[in-house]
Length: 312
Image (cartoon, rainbow, N blue to C red; front, side, top):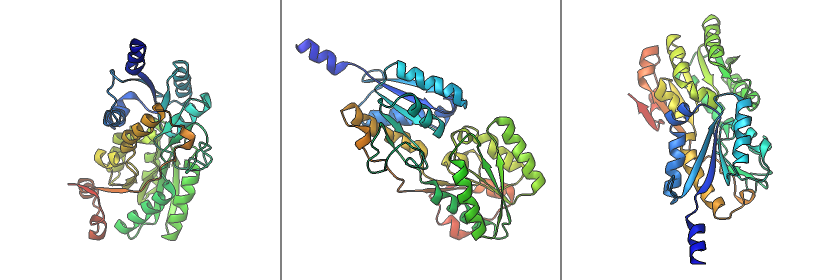
């Protein structure tokens, strides 16, 4: 009996990690490392206390579905997902294995939970509440560009949430007497084409909607915006680090670290349907002054004073 108890106590727990983008982007954005660090904070050492079965969709929803099915066949005890497409892929292949989502603009509307307080199924995790963020993005751009008239919006047609988010941006733009120009892009080539179109349209600024693929292509998007001297605003702080003008939103990378606490509770017997989905309580404003100088935009002191971080 003591030997049996020891074997039970020392067995490695098997955790799945399903990420929409590439392995490289998951590591560059520190989302993979963030989750491992969170597990360590909860008392789990990789290779000693748990195995992490990481699978990546490389930006392809069909491949992502195959990777989700593979994790189910491996009998992982819980799946941590990164990206809207990853959330859907995991939910489509299992209604029993617990799923911890790291970001979802509307978990109830997207069908992942009955309510935020009591999800009820096998999904829990984090809501990103983007409707409030969209309005703030337009407000911040208007503060920096008083004559803002034409606002471009980069949206991913493969992201079902972007349709409702586009409406939020349009409503906010109307309040500031600005016209919106939506541009769809879901490939590297499509992003290049979208910015070429922005050159022709003479947009005053661009809002880049939050998306795992766009986070993966942060360097490309920032480069294109700089070439056009186009003020840009994003959700993730990593985009400002890559050269974008501003970011305002929740720190999604930190959600991967915090997701480990959900995994810990689930491994100890908690039911995901009884674990409330967390709503964001803090939004970060990051401003890249190097980019502002390069594109000739003067950031008002009223905006600078609100910044959580300024890149000099």
